Length: 351
Image 1: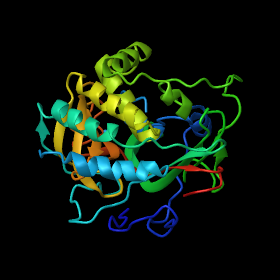
Image 2: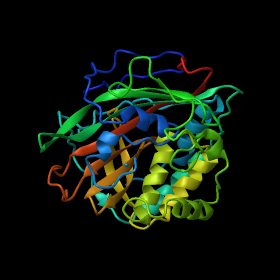
Image 3: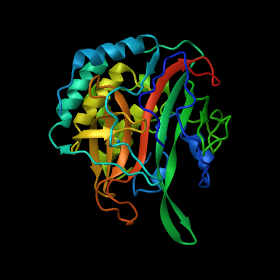
């Protein structure tokens, strides 16, 4: 579980030797159907969800011009590659069979200013445009822990670092998922009706690319919609709103204008803080915008590159008391790194 963060990728070359061998794990009942139903979305690993009480699924000045330039250049050609950067290897990367990490220091006042700044960089990028018939391809690296119960005895087990790939049609009606431990090597189709026989309808918890394009880009209107549509979910409206925005950032490809609005909306949520250091699943370190879920003692962190302000990924870490007594502070319940977002011509293709 130690990928080399110094390896890079280009839009025309795909590395295959940078991850360790993947071990197969027992799948909970309905795992495949879970993925199919929740495809076009911010799918939160249900092995992680089982380990925490509520998750329906993560100070320095920001340099705005390089951020806008880097994002604009990548988005202009319809592909965003988020690759490991150079510099010192982070010592905050999750390690061990049961993932643990060093916890960063919280700045209770810094998040709104930081989010407002990076929203300006995001808004200046050019929007990606796919051709008719293309798919949105998202590749992430993910790892975490889950609780396994055998003969009434529960213990925490690690979910090995692996690559997860999704292909999604813009309307949300077709696609494919490939994820070791959840699908076979060929993946599973995400086309067709859901478990109830109905055609899936995009919503905030399972958005299609077209659905995202129709969301309001006024931060206040957007946050109001999030509050209204997630009412009664999660551990309170503010925590659920933060969770929903994080999943939209990490499991879909919002336009630059919508990304900027999501950042500004998050800045309006009470309890959102800035964390001075966090590391994603690919070993990339940065600063994080975070919120504590007091019910479970977990902190979800959205990780941003220090230099470009690009969104790198997210992680959820145990920082307080676990009601079940299984998770120690510093345990990483889930860690995700967004590696590639691109338009491709079919569900067998990669950039």
